[in-house]
Image (cartoon, rainbow over all chains, first blue to last red):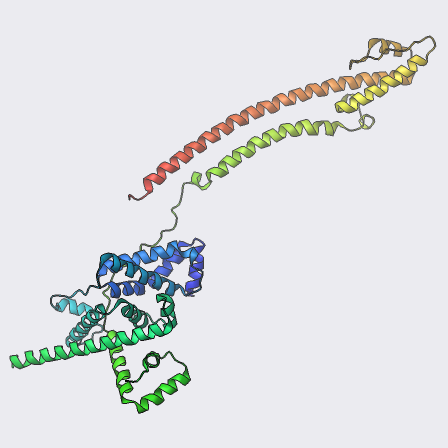
Length: 202
Length: 237
């Protein structure tokens, strides 16, 4: 029987280290993903995720269960990412590969049924999204990340970012609208480039 | 552009009340701008799904369970110290108990004991019996014709002239005098026994003290080794 986060937190607070290990295993991927999408670099994401769990462990006794454990963990991570960017004085990095390695592509295939063309398109879209997200103001980016990739409610995001509910909705709307325009423009440019390449080759 | 941003966002994320949802759908049926907006928001949400996170190893080194310790480390230092203290106190309490309980055990009335030699009375009781007997002897001797008043001695020993004086006394007085002499001897024996016991207790206490010091030294050594062990196993910073 799977123990809930609250049960694991209670055990960990009582000194059961294995319970905290279980919490880490359960939340490691989402926390790393949030840090990676916020900061854009794997090493930074790894450091922030480690620090987030360390802070959670140290602060476990102070966690009163008023919010979900996951929300508390996300808040720690968001704050750490903010501190990180402030300290590094930079916007998120978007690491762009020089070229597409077919071997790399094979490893990255979502399913054997996915064609190489689809895979290339997916990776291009992934990079396009990363670029577009990196250009967003931090508040809009955080709101979109927490909503889109972590499924938090508007209220949970508002509590986490210390802002009114309506502000969260506005940030989401504005952020998604900007993304939409940029991605549509990028897609249009890429389509134009492909067409030009095809025409020149034929 | 309709001022419906918040309502559209709630609708897109399906985070609105059923009534609110119906109202938005009613609005969308008559507003092509908002329909286009909703379509655009849904597409961009679809695009966002393409953003992958690279595979990564665990970011966390799991806490290891506490390492098994040598058996001597299972007992905390404070518990060893407490145990040593208890042994010491038990020894001391034994000595005190001997002093306190021994007279109480002997406080059985002399009449109830089977033999005079085995009777053991506390000093207060003995003194009282002795005083009573002396008073009786004195009264009987003084009542005899020609006898003058007998001088009261402060010594514990029965005055020889009283014993002599009692030789011609009645059988009851002679019996009392003999009884008094026996009690006096019992008292001396009891005191000797007590001194002997005290010596034994003190010898035990000295032995316990030595053992306590040894334990204390062992504890110091143990603490020292624990520190060395902890310093050796602590990861380099």
